[in-house]
Image (cartoon, rainbow, N blue to C red; front, top):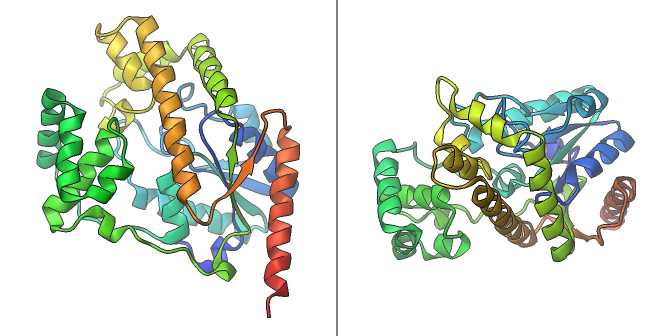
Length: 323
């Protein structure tokens, strides 16, 4: 199931970099709209990964219903296709009950796949993936990036050196189809009259966000993130590659394996989270449908919610004024 134009027109989307205040703003927006929240977070789907993914609390979920949180076990692989299918089902159900779907999260690929449709790529070739992962560990991420640049320079220019999973997928697509992944991802935006009520992203000041990220990592550690990670890797079946590579968890897993001190693991988590926030900034800035909401960091969630509603009202008035 994919998103029809009619379904999209009933949806609201709030994106932004990690730690920018999306969740609190979405709670305020959903309360104002009589809406329900659908998560746009590729790791919040996993059960038992609560602290490190900054999931909404049980109290928040009681106040506003949340969807696509805790829908898979950590050992399961979860595809973008499956996400879009479940998101469309959830949104359809919310609309049928007379409420508004409010999407919130920072996974740009999920957002683009909903807005523009899915890329139907080949099935995973696990022997090829395992071989590329082994070579990347031995030869370094720059080797993998160079190999990708040789077959798909457009995708290579878009992906960060540390994004091994997506680099491997892009190489896999080329090896299996003979075509670069970038050839199949030039989906264009839908016409204005088929787009959602609002697609916005929070754009906070860089230094403010840097401080927020550092403090949030410390708060997560104090809340028991290390013990959560320990329990995660002791699960049977063991976590999937995707779950193990989740932001922050991978560094804590290395600490628990004796490869890093705890202080170093925390430091690397802060660095990788700040780098991830920069990549999110690029994702949303380059997504034509996504309108930036510059913020100072002093705004209340209610004030940001009001700005989003005003943007939607202005857009609707503009559409109605067209001949």
